[in-house]
Image (cartoon, rainbow, N blue to C red; front, side):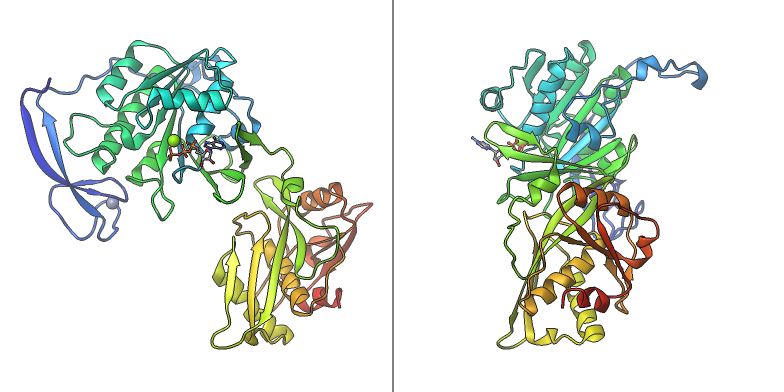
Length: 453
Ligand SMILES: Nc1ncnc2c1ncn2[C@@H]1O[C@H](COP(=O)(O)OP(=O)(O)OP(=O)(O)O)[C@@H](O)[C@H]1O
Ligand SMILES: [Mg+2]
Ligand SMILES: [Zn+2]
């Protein structure tokens, strides 16, 4: 029980979490403008209990065996988090409502449970019955998963201090609150304090901590940006509600690359790993010829993926022509169209242009430039490409085709999926060779387009 209560008002930066005594227009820590929010803080005079563990060792004497991590065996998950969970590591899993965060962590928990790891799943969001219903649908038995419905930080801390777990899951950090603060759960002060204490416990007791976080409209984890600095790894679960695939992407990783992605398919029985993304995304690629459709090879992390880019060009009837890009940056499309008009003389100003990535993927890779332009011209002229050719290349302002990374991998992937020919940047040609693929290097857009006309 809190005896001597002290109430004060503080102003928190929603960007970095810094606390200010007075309101001001600019955060003194991070320099952001208009980011301070008022929150009431109740502090008890009796200080919060501190743990006695002091983690202090001579570096050379830290035994390595105590820091060996564990893999879930769900390779799409393991790869994104940097290979394995490590004792004391904290992962923040962000994602839009209903995208499948709870599903993913429950399946990960089950994978560890089957390896006789002990897991505690703390849900502040759902009742234990709801959790059980999901478990049944996902065929999760959960022999070593302890399910707890709690939102009080003090209660959770008590539990974590007295029992030992390998993995602790918090679903979600926005529901946890400390009675040290009067502000409601989900506010900056509460999120900051809860995360701070839980991460401290994880480090002290050596369990791996997975925090689920909701995201705001602009796609950031709700609460202070500070949360992202506090954790070791930040992963986002994204996808399109209208499509079945879900993408796991790391945006920060102290233990591995941030470029890796994990791909899942959402099914009634849960998330299923997509081991061969190229076949998955080319599933709808018809073997009959269509204009405006071009296959390209992108690289996500170290993995090459073949995807189909589609374009539809129709004559604009009145006013400003429409440019609609699905899964791509609209400005990039506008720029590419301007380059096409200026350098190759196609009358793009009198046409509406719609482009998208089949399957609903959201991509930003520069190597998509050339395939997009080829697809656009193919649709404009109503001339289909043959379906054994892959196009890859970045395009510069003067219409030059620039080299891209990991060309060898892209070529091998295209070959594996039965493609015979690849149109690629001329500058990449010298680094690559393939005995069975015909490789054609191009220096500018025009020479690429000439190959089809
Ligand atoms: N009976 C079902 N059959 C198939 N898919 C289902 C079923 N029930 C739920 N789903 C899928 O699971 C998704 C919800 O997953 P989950 O609850 O893991 O998401 P979440 O990210 O944790 O959501 P929240 O933000 O609400 O906590 C739904 O959007 C749907 O795609
Ligand atoms: Mg959930
Ligand atoms: Zn700030």
